[in-house]
Amino acid sequence: MSEVISLSDQLTDEEWLAEIDELGEARGYFQSVGPDHSALFLDESFDVLLVSFDTIASARAGSASGIPHAMLQAEIRGWSHLSILAKSNSWFRDRAVYGYFDRLVDDGFFEDFDHVIFYGAGLAGYAAAAFSVAAPGATVIAIAPQATLDPEVAGWDDRFIHMRRTSFTDRYGYAPDMVEAADKVFVLYDPIVDLDAMHASLFQGPMVHRIRLRHTGPRTGGTVQALNILGPLFEKAAAGTLRPLDFYKAFKRRHRYMPYLRNLLGQVHIEERHYLTALLCRAVLSLKNSQRFRHHFELAEHRLIEQGGRLPPTLSQRRAAQSNARNS
Image 1 (cartoon, helix red, strand yellow):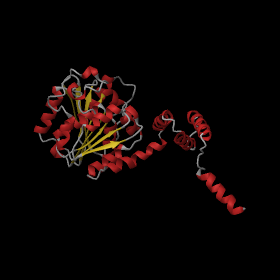
Image 2 (image 1 turned 90 degrees about the vertical axis):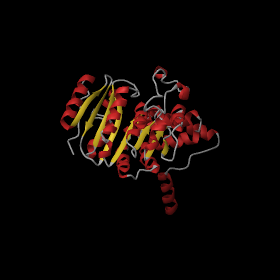
Image 3 (image 1 turned 135 degrees about the horizontal axis):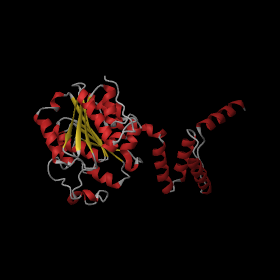
Image 4 (image 1 turned 120 degrees about the horizontal axis):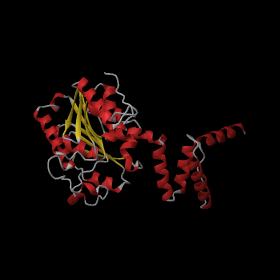
């Protein structure tokens, strides 16, 4: 395995791309794909190819090393990596990108690898699903992907109105159709985010597994990356053993992740579920002193008592009571 790459966050985008260019020249290749996109290939092994899509902004924020999160995971494991980079939020809808993938197919590029994994989040999740058709039998992990932004199909999604003149009906267009040749497709999303859930529902078929990660909010991809759970999941994908249950087991890490806990607190508070609010806040306060959670704990406990309810004793309280009973 090569030394893990690290790029300074002090670089401008152009300087960062120049560093990526040098890296490609040394260990594979880097090439422009039209004026707005580029491709970096790091040639490490024929066992696993991890393909990821990012904007330059998301790539630089993807890890503490200043490289895409997927690239970091590939580096750690000595896998080959193909990174498709966009200068803007293009959804990778560019004929130059289509032509690039056409050439990869014509050259039998994907056939060289035992396992191919496509990964992306948000607009990059759309691209991971859409371009996976180039590698039949691949595994796709797409976080909160859009199925399409064609207004005839997804006119209800008003978040990206500026993309409505962009064609999603030509080649590599409708992502749910493009994943039909994949071995397994895992679509991760928060079902509470209605528009993400509506896009997820458009992905159908026996190969599709929808993974519902509640209370991750509109930044499900950022939460999953911050929990640092993707690496082991990629390993299972490479071994052909990845299952939906693996995502839910890995996601248990959220119980100590404060942004997730704050999202959950906001939800139960809005729903005026005082018992659950008090339980949640008490659990968080046992891990960390937080004024926000202490305030909501005291408020929820007070309202719970007003309604004639009470919280069950904590584990330490139960043990103390049992000890007192034995000594009495």
